[in-house]
Structure formats: C-alpha cells, structure tokens
Length: 79
Image (cartoon, rainbow, N blue to C red; front, side, top):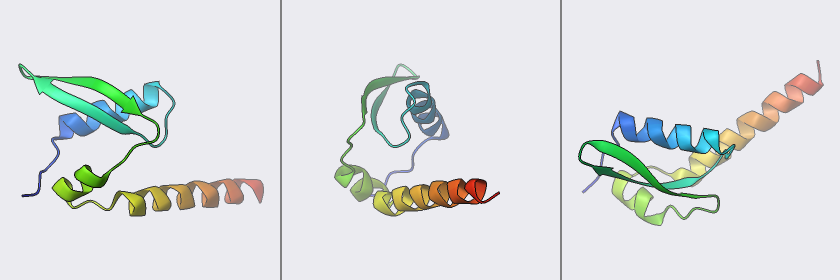
C-alpha cells in the first residue's frame, strides 16, 4: 500500500535539510499529538523503504537534481 506524504511533512524535511546546509538527506520524522518532529537527519540515506511505500524513484530525482546543478554551474561559468 502506497503512502502519500503530507505537505507539512515535506515542508519540515525541506526546512530541516536547509537549516543544516544538506542538499540530499534522509530525514526521519514522526507526527505526535498533531505536531511533526525531526528525529534524525541522515547525510548518507537509504531509501529502500521510502521507495517501496511511496513509489518514488529517489535515485532518479537525485540524478536530475545534480544534473540541473551542473548545467546551471556550466551556464554561469560560460557567461
């Protein structure tokens, strides 16, 4: 059974990674009494269970992210 991530969960993960200056991370979160909490930020994440539960191909997204960063840097360097 696939799980849909709540927008609030996505937002807290993005903020957690950004505040730690981490571009790619696995973030363990939990919702308790209506509030989201960050339990852990992993800089060398494993996405096997996440992919299984959400159907999201994480590697594909990471590759696309890196490709866009490289292309942007090359474009900036070329003027």
